[in-house]
Image (cartoon, one colour):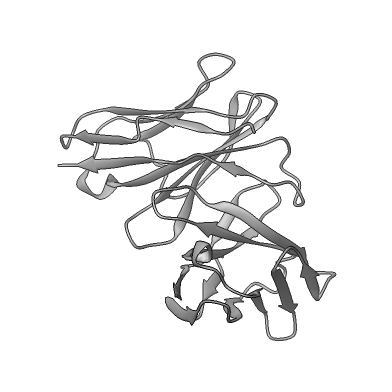
Length: 115
Length: 111
């Protein structure tokens, strides 16, 4: 069964450092998303991406964040200068469509710990 | 604005009993809802969805009920099994495909 894969599973970084979280969406999907989940809290939308551009972003997704689809398979989330409050689980999701009755498939997540 | 929430953070049930997990929403314009299951260390997994033109939808051992009058939806799990232990989130899907998640209910199944 096709799945969304994320690497690394756990990333520890020092405050102020740049991190890149990587995702390989399901191959025939066209819509890509990043979400984050701070420990014990709900999953929060960060950004959606379609046709090589951001279609929507949340207030959380400030200038420190960027996304890129550098090739035909990877979808990355970059945090330029990490802060302690960026520590969270980051989930990538992909979907063949953005319509309401289309499921989004989530990866296993990357746990980011900023120290 | 962001509007989806759940009533209880934790629900403990006996194996074999039925579970009911609740969710309230505040945006009366919301018209599509999804329940997700999140097991420890994993990403959210789709369980079942419902559109606002429906009151009820059934899947395998799961039923979602939608009450638009009081802006409430629930997930019912029949004959709860240990493998059902997880955090359950309701979510609203917007026009652009983004999901707005509620806080989550942890379901604990006692053997």
